[in-house]
Length: 167
Image 1 (cartoon, rainbow, N blue to C red):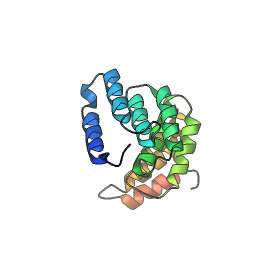
Image 2: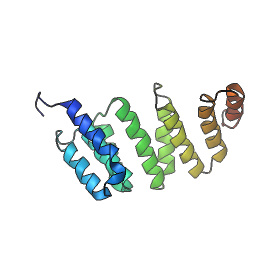
Image 3: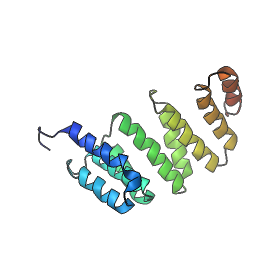
Image 4: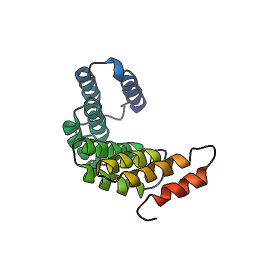
């Protein structure tokens, strides 16, 4: 990739492709994402992540898992790193490996806060339900929800915390 590569154009085309996801045949969508990712150097973490996301979004979780792992191992950074972690955990849950998903998302909750905190909690709650820990899942989900209510925030947060194992 030369210094003349236009990241903003690439990101724009990527956003345009994702915007029409629901109108494109899944296999065609994968090919289009793969083609766009091929504009980046082989093994580029962002390209791997976008390819994984396309595989995952079209029901190819097994193919997505390896790509997510390669992207993360390849130094994926910023918000895409967090998205990859959430999506990998969800993929693992769908593949029946819920404990791995729980471990990933539990570790992710300890990382610096950002706009994806509630997504981390929501997907962790899904994993917890699958692991037979529905009460803990409800506590986690309700605790996240409590921050967004116009009233009853403190009450709901207390009730939610009482459902968590550390209560």
